[in-house]
Length: 115
Image (cartoon, one colour):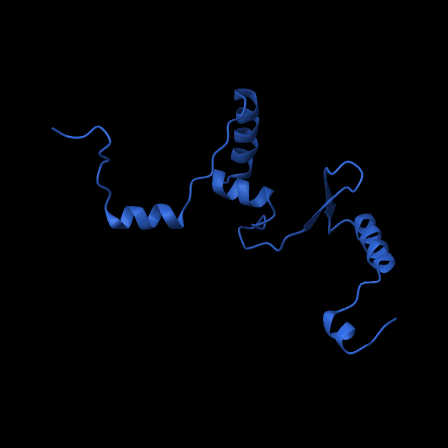
């Protein structure tokens, strides 16, 4: 008699593939899915390309993209703050923050350099 807890044998190649290609999934409302699918189709992309492009990990032309956002945390409400590094206004705010924070390279601090 076969035990109920016995699992189906998987070939080692499938185990390796699943380890190196993890599944990403989430539940959305049907209306949201239809909207996402419509936008994806209009761009002629697979769901993988659509997801990676939206996350800033894939350039619109299919090449690798550098991250174009910086995510921080609001000290008042602790909600995420997203700065678009391609937005000049956001970049000015970040420059002001860094200037007030008096940031220095670790090597400069070790060498006793200060502003």
